[in-house]
Image (cartoon, rainbow, N blue to C red):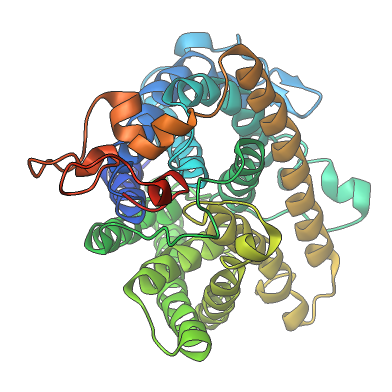
Length: 439
């Protein structure tokens, strides 16, 4: 196989690694409150530490291999600890490892300010084992939801599923998990009663920019055709990667516009938080579709995802669930828009190209299947963690701030006790703060 292909895969894996730390850590950290910024960042760093190790032990084996179990997952002991894996195969292990890491880290945004760090550390290995690895096998490893070799198309009479880089495995999976955890944890103190605002929007915008850069590894690195050094294969390789790069770019750009338009109509102003969130919404939506759409289709998908995600983030107030940093509104809704949108906009098989509704039917079914799978196993894992050590910090710790109560640190030290839930004058915490006002 072509060495240039392998070099790009190594670069792509590094880009995706950067998406978790520092990109997601900065994006979520800036959106959180000053008294929980370190905890938010620690969730991303701990995902890298824990999931990275587990992926080498049994994650790769459960996701890919020759000992399929009911088309749902692979035998976790077939290549346990990467037994039998060597040479250039390490490149693909490393690349897929970074996907597992960021998928788990994405969930953390839904549980800001109130989840025990010990509960998060226990949740991570269980969740990737029972939710992420099986879905990765089903979609990319030859399982139930995979392409031509999968069983889903035959079962429903539809076309082969399309998920280029993780609409179901990553974004729908993480979005549903975030929703389940948010419901099980309950609302933050003061949610819906007091303003709970991002404490550092410049950090969030820097994180969004780094996420956009890293996403080229995420999407363009997910190449379904490997160049083997011949002129013909290299030409196909370059054609596909260039299309994916362009689609990724214009979808994110269009989503920024779509989000800002909705904000301007609804609130009279376009915000920096909206622009940063729009970037991510567009990238989420194009993730499963980046190899199946034309650039015009990618622009349409980006506009729709930016607008719908901008509308969706407000649903938590109407429906009464506390998705702290909009994981549900951006990743679940954006993942659904991208996965189902393929059925309309794909240049091969799409409804808008006169190819009927077979692909659309398949895309709807794989989206629903991923939602149910993630919801069931997230609930079971979270319930187990709750029974063993509990999920939520106590009220005093939440008021004081999870940075100090969980890590013994504060993100900002100005010579006062601001980071510990007290006023600048050092007075005791007021009743208003006890009801949930931002520190």
